[in-house]
Image (cartoon, rainbow over all chains, first blue to last red; front, side):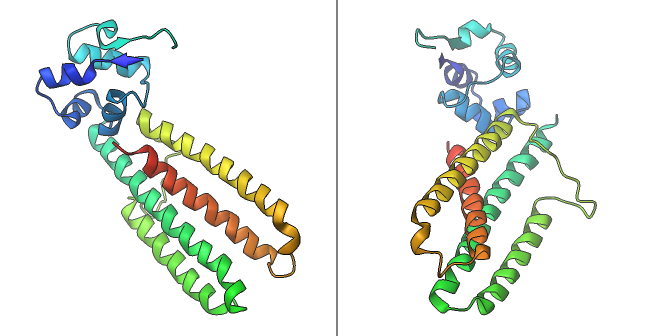
Length: 66
Length: 139
């Protein structure tokens, strides 16, 4: 699964820590989700999407082998 | 959950990992020293002191109070996940080390006591837990 969180975050001018603070998770959660090492729960995915005022589908892209 | 709580959990996990590695090395020395020195008395005293020292440091820096309030799991999703995976690594490492000891036990039985083996297994568990947490926490 690919995601565009880093792109959205940089466009918003936020650091990983600032995004983590905004949605109440650890910075490592953001870091590892961005690098595709950790797949977040629906709750976190929805929180991130809501923070960027977008949909979950625009943040995450499912691939054929997923 | 407050952001401050998450930062405390992150810090606590990092201290916990350092504590595990330190403890693992101490236990490894304690379990291996009697083979070289033919006595475990001096190092057992040193080991016990190191254990108590690191335990106190862990208690103080981990944010425990005298009530020893303990959270069973981490509330942050990622920290909780890496903690669970670290325990899986511990079980795997324990199985591998026990299997290895089983395979090579014939040559060791005369020199190594049960307490040394128990300490060795504990050392492996502590080391693997600490290393696993740090490995999973990398950016």
